[in-house]
Length: 188
Image (cartoon, helix red, strand yellow):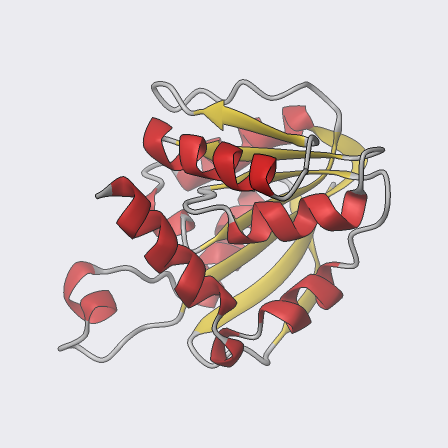
């Protein structure tokens, strides 16, 4: 079942209508940088990031489901990628190296986090002084959609307010995604 879910997550992430190439281009990740993919799911973006940062860089695939991390690990091995580190979230604790990340990438996961201001504040510990957080989150869906029924969205204004409270500065905002907000915040 987990492999099926992981494949479905990857299929959706890679769908051209969700513009994965433009997302990667907008982040401007470079060779040798480090990034944490929080809520990695099937690892579509983790694997793409690993190809960009090469052996000199690090990708931390972070998820609460060990079976997803196993799937990512196996996919990385198949592709000959040795720079992906699977990180299991335990009781909302992230086991990431302090002050080491250039980026934290969060796609469609912030609506699952209960106390986001505190969570975002805590993420600062893992970022380098010029580190950034990339947030891609669903816009409000129509009522009779999965997003609408289950509240899998957060208004952009709420994210902006919470990130400011947590001590971040809005650096860039993109509007090319049809169903999601896409913002990059700089650590203040």
